[in-house]
Image 1 (cartoon, rainbow, N blue to C red):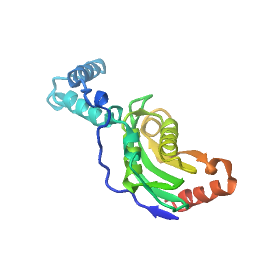
Image 2: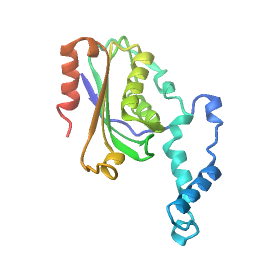
Image 3: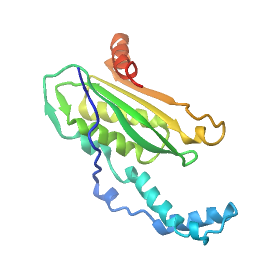
Image 4: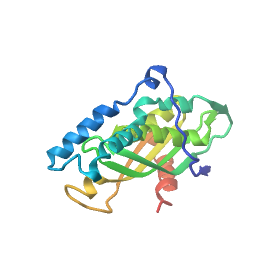
Length: 209
């Protein structure tokens, strides 16, 4: 078994048709000004004058995953006979809840059982980053990461666990700060074999803070 911390994340463009898309900053800025007016604020007030431009830049950054294909990071693999668990824990991520456009942040744990090939360790962290950088729900994000790893690596087993705190639950609505959402997606032997599932969950959850 190999357990690794995540490497520094870097993002890369992939498909050229996606790469050429440009975020419409002016349109976002106009919408933000409308929202400020709608809630009774003055968008021309000194403190708010540059807010629409800041929000536009923030959305371009937070939704940058819409313009990238995370599969590209899993296409360069290495032949190895290693057949035990490879697990990367505590991959920090930030995403945006698509229901309220409020952030949710947490950690992803991604493990797989190789089937004759392994991928560079930082690539899994890059996949998490790019899947997170789009309007999301945590449940779908968990499934998407698992499907990508299983499909691109033909892994014998894949386990993905996400832990996150959701602003839409902690600062509005029910307002329960400190609450965490944990989701999991299991593929291959981790789904089919109870002892293998228990092993990987013990490695992931048993030692988390």
